[in-house]
Image (cartoon, rainbow, N blue to C red; front, side, top):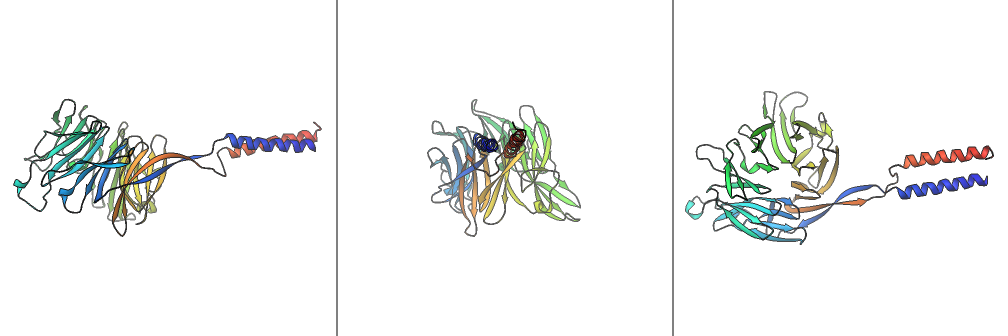
Amino acid sequence: MNKVLTGFRYAAILIAVLIIIIPASAEMVWENTVIPVENGSFTGGDISGNNIIFLKSEGMNLKLNRICLYSTEEEKVRIIGTPSLNMTVTGYGISGNYAVWFEEDGSIFDTNESLTKPNTVFLANLENNTTKALNLSPTAKWPKISGDRIFWSEDDENSYYDIANIYDIRTEESTPIPEIKSIDSAGVIFESGNIAYQDLKGDLCIYNPESKENITVFVTEHSNISNSGVQYFDMAGDYVIYIKSKIVFEGTDKGSYDEPWIYEISTGKSSLISPLTGEFTDSLTKDEKKATITSPFTDGKRVGFGLIKSESESAIILIDPVAGNSSVIRADDSVSGIKIDGSRMIWGRSIFPSFDQALIYAREKEERTESTAAPGFTVIAGITGALLSVLILNRRKGL
């Protein structure tokens, strides 16, 4: 009997040792910080590495707009863009050590053109703290920067759409892109050598200036039964994520709802995502069709969007298309303007009913969490049980 008890003791020790050597389960958590915006409110934002760029505004007076930069290392905000007399600044972007924005007429209620000057695109070098005005066009607007190139637009006197251009920072030369005719220059995405835009019909397209290839990601649909179109989109690396808004006029699906989709540029494959879980799916359930989603985003590695659950609660759905998994990040109030760069993320927080806003910076960190059912526990129990059975059997045999 002593041998059996000894065997049980050995088994107990084995369980303890196995549990100790197996690491505790880990999950990724996001630590949030509110970026201070004094004497005004923020409008949107963008992030690259340790720098966050955003627009600070003060009510309806556009002349008080300022382009601000927040350093996550220094935890300080500084103004890097101030408008000239009767002008305003907007249309910011950031990539590496470069930031861009443009200046335009800030007198929205005054039609006297003599009070203002032509538009100007500005380029800031964050490494040496210098800023210069680019000599582009009197109507230059909505710059988008990626690496050492800037996509920008200008008015076309002979049409209602804008002329697209790419400026090379190294050569200081601009090249027109006549193939792009967009209905919304402000919404164009320029990233990793590709340009994502909505054409004159509202279709979502990708154009590559090097290969001259133009890809249609989504075609706007119109019929007597339903209409659908792209509401929001983002692009980076091999991914385009977009929100398809659909209105069904009759039948069992009658109503309006949004669908999040991922498009893989290299394969041309489009995949529907559950707006509640971030999992890939073939169709949406009734509950999924009721979801309120917004602000699709990607950094080329992960994609996601905002899910507004109520006036006081939201979630950020984060998806890894390669691994095929997703996670849900809890967020207070209503979220908007989500941007991600690796382990860093920003979003806007709108507080109801005060309508106060806050710009949130979040950093992803790994946090170990103890679990009562650690991975491999069933295997451990099985091995230990088998060991005890052998000990008891041997005892009965007199071994």
